[in-house]
Amino acid sequence: MNRLSRRKRSLIEVFAVPALLALTTMVGLVAGLTGQGAPDVLAWLLLALPLGALALAWARRSRSN
Image (cartoon, rainbow, N blue to C red; front, side, top):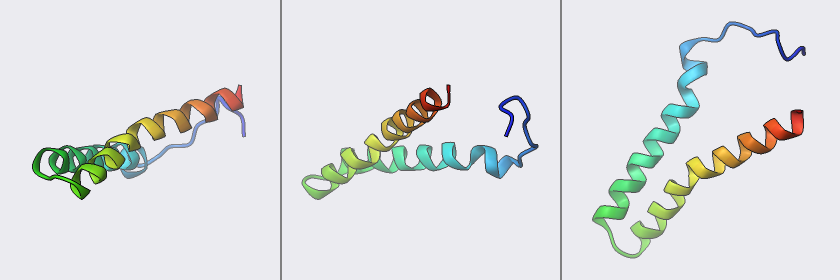
C-alpha cells in the first residue's frame, strides 16, 4: 500500500486506542493512589502501557522507513 494513500476511517477507529490508553492510565492512577501491595503492582503495569505503546509505534515507524 502506498504510504501517501489513506483510507477514510471512522471516529471509533481513530480514537479507540487513545481512549483505551487513557482509561488504563486513569485506572492505574486510582489503583496507585488507593491501594497497597497488589494494587500498586497493577498501577505500575497499567501506567507502563502507554510507554509500551509508544515504543511499539516508534519501532514500527523506524522499521517502515
